[in-house]
Image (cartoon, rainbow, N blue to C red; front, side, top):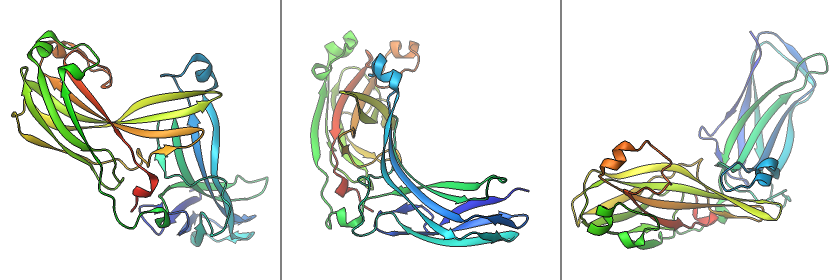
Length: 322
């Protein structure tokens, strides 16, 4: 049986803020006593940037990974050199990511797992055992959110954008029966919201000569990375939410309610080396024999039997609060 190390945080959701103490304990299960040269706990926060395919050119794809941006890198000694007895040993710890008046290496962005941009904060415990023994370590990610001081005291009402979708608003070809018959879909959707609140709105199919197959809301992320003197932008799908299945009644208001996935979304960021934005795509699929013959493809790809409307979601950091 080998020695096991587990990092346990007092907050089970592992959500923390830069200026608040992060508390927990290091749990060590060892079949026998072990000598060590000290036990240290460190935290590293960084923005990882990379470019892969898509809109990237040959030169950008060749370089691939861009130098990461360090946000925080600090460590504390939990236990001085000595010996750990056999069985279970628990070592409590407390660490603050950003002390008052302390100069940080970079701005504390919220945790985010993207395609080309990833923002992570990792806690690592290291047990040094000298040259003759392999060091022991364990790493756990925490979710960092904005400080309460950066959050507005009173909630801001979501900004609503009014939209309409017709055959004339489409930038790609449609089937002749859809274009000649015509359709009109209207509604409104929030374009400024908190991570804790859903994207809300409503949608109404006023007219449609061709029966509707489904209506979906696609949540997209738009990540831009500065590579040399060029900005490489990549758009990818995060999630799809179906709000209607089958041909819907005309002039009936359908609610839009989309819950945001926490780790895959974050406050919109516009930094120098990178930016993160989000889009909502309203996709209306019409019933067609051609759609049955086509295999499933990228939902962002325009198809003859699909109508698409894009709306930007703009959000500031201080609006996303617990």
